[in-house]
Amino acid sequence: MNLTSLRIITADIKRLVQFLENTTNFKAIWYTEDFAEIKIGSSTLAIGSTKTLSFFREAIAQPENNKSVILEFRVENVDHEYERIKNFVSDIVQEPTTMPWGNRSLLFRDPDGNLINFFTPVSTEAITKFNQ
Image (cartoon, rainbow, N blue to C red; front, side):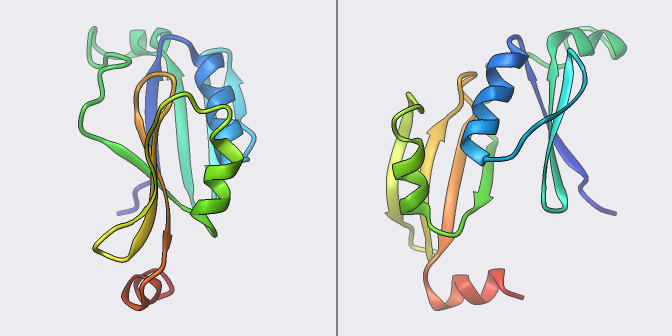
């Protein structure tokens, strides 16, 4: 089994896709006006408008209600990324901080309130973990 993608449902797909393109530095591929994907390495971040929910059961997802999932991106230099995004990200939850498990972490919210973590392994153990 392979985790192929993570999909975010939003009421304002153009706004969220533009934000994600700016923060990740990857361009989205638009398949329809209501569905886009950002391919990053072997992973895909899919973004669907609320209109895509009509293909499933009603009320299976509600945009801007995430209280438990954090999108995490390993970056080469989290401090550099902070300097790059701090002027257009309006909700920085935590400036770059070294965590007890060995990652230097930057936590912020996208326009829908979803948490995003940019992190860089800095301890020997964390570097080893991610270089295997």
